[in-house]
Image 1 (cartoon, rainbow, N blue to C red):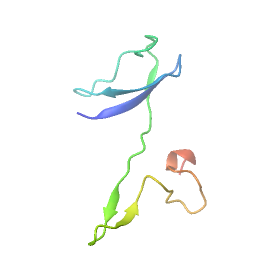
Image 2: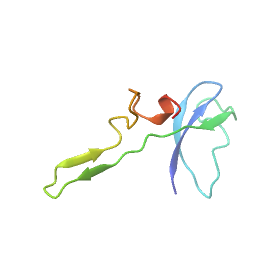
Image 3: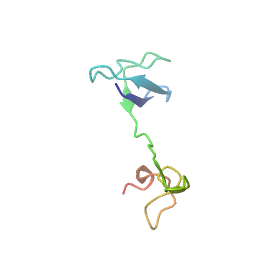
Image 4: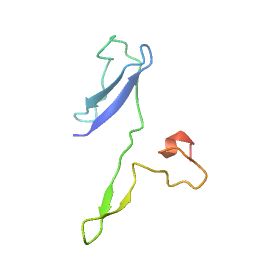
Length: 77
């Protein structure tokens, strides 16, 4: 069961929600408004070489060549 991030359209409260059976949250836990939207989450990985050194990491830098954002959501690519 995955955990997704949501944001309330009324009070801008950001929260995580454990999705059971594909059912999104019905309302914001802070204000009770039903206008919540799923947010894009940053995920990451770390690849290690044979000696245990970090050889690649996705969460700390952008893979775009002309962009300084840490995710493609920043520039829309």
